Amino acid sequence: ADAAFEELYRAAFPKVYAFIRSQVSSVETAQELVGRIFLKVYSHRLKRPASNTGAMQWTFRIAHTTLIDYWRVERRRESANLSLDEIAELATESEDPEGAYKRKQRSAHLVKMMSHLSEDDRMILALRFQAQRTNREIAVILGLSEGAVSMRLLRALRRLREQLQKTGWS
Image 1 (cartoon, rainbow, N blue to C red):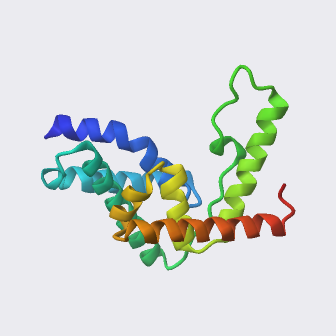
Image 2: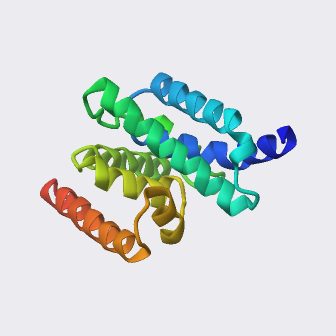
């Protein structure tokens, strides 16, 4: 069971961290929540679904409920507040420094605009784009139909686009 946990941890950690980090305002909070999530995953490892896909969806359900519990206790929704360096990976060798800077600026602006969206919109966008989950996986994680996930994603993207247009995003 421990080898299976280690394998799941290695596969899920980067995506769970990206998902949680996009939902909270500090690295410390993200690290604390991700620690809680994987403690729960480890504590309940005997209930883990056998398939890798099932185990990943199960882990994200735990991440989702842990985040909701955190927001409930904190009684506030934090706005995502990432620095330019935290958002983007380092520039590739082929990318010029100015191009890398502009990409980081655009990413920071996008994160700032996302913080104006509702928790539901931020959650579904983060699961889709930061955590790289499919609509089917998001449906399982959130307990929705796949059609409802598609509709919510479309509406969240529309609201994000409207936010960006208000600020003159091109």
